[in-house]
Image 1 (cartoon, protein in one colour):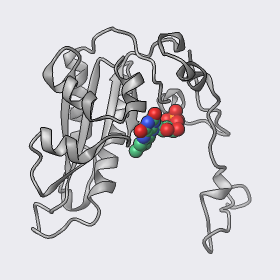
Image 2: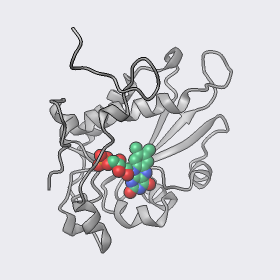
Image 3: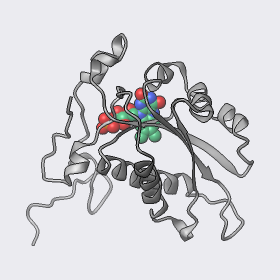
Image 4: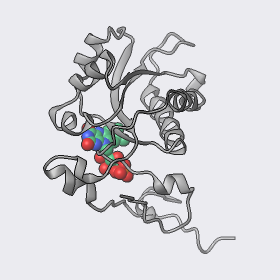
Amino acid sequence: MEKPAVTNLDIHPLLKKRWSPRSFTSQKVDNDSLARIFEAARWAPSSFNDQPWRFIVGRKGDKTWDMILETLVEFNQQWAKLAPVLVLSIGKKISTKTGKPNRIFEYDLGQGVAYLTFQAMHEGLFMHQMGGLDKDKAASIFNVPEDYQVLTAMAIGHKGEPELLEGDFVKMEKSDRDRLSAAELVFEEEFGQSADFTSKG
Ligand SMILES: Cc1cc2nc3c(=O)[nH]c(=O)nc-3n(C[C@H](O)[C@H](O)[C@H](O)COP(=O)(O)O)c2cc1C
């Protein structure tokens, strides 16, 4: 099943194609693809080039995968158990450069994940991010140091058909996608005043 973004204007085909499925086939993710998606994250920009992103990767069948699944809230466990790869994202709270708190580390980590997502799409994979996990439990079982913070988890794999899912998840998988309009998001002159891209030079 495809759920391309219904865009008003042309955007990059991979961005149009991307969505967050919960159904994944049992096909394994190639190690080379996996290495490349983390390479993409490595090359994201960050404040002071601090690169405050860290990842823990589990492949179905290994101990790490089991441990990541165990940290997810039950809702997420119910579908994420299909994913051949589970990843934990962890941010470094203290700047390596200044030794002071990095007040923007979550933004940077999100940017690393956005790069990773784009490369995953390029590899023919799909991703579903999750904020629903027990972060303290994850930090504890993976011995995450004090100056780091567990933030999200990700399911990665080859997209499956909705019918691989159980119960209400099938309907949710088939539901429409929606977005705020550009007019609600992009302003000029003052906050709330929609930017006009039509009438200017
Ligand atoms: C940081 C973040 C946390 C999310 N947490 C969850 C989650 O815990 N469980 C879930 O099923 N989906 C989660 N999602 C997926 C969003 O619901 C999804 O991206 C959003 O509805 C937009 O849909 P799309 O990605 O298909 O365009 C999360 C997404 C992001 C970016």
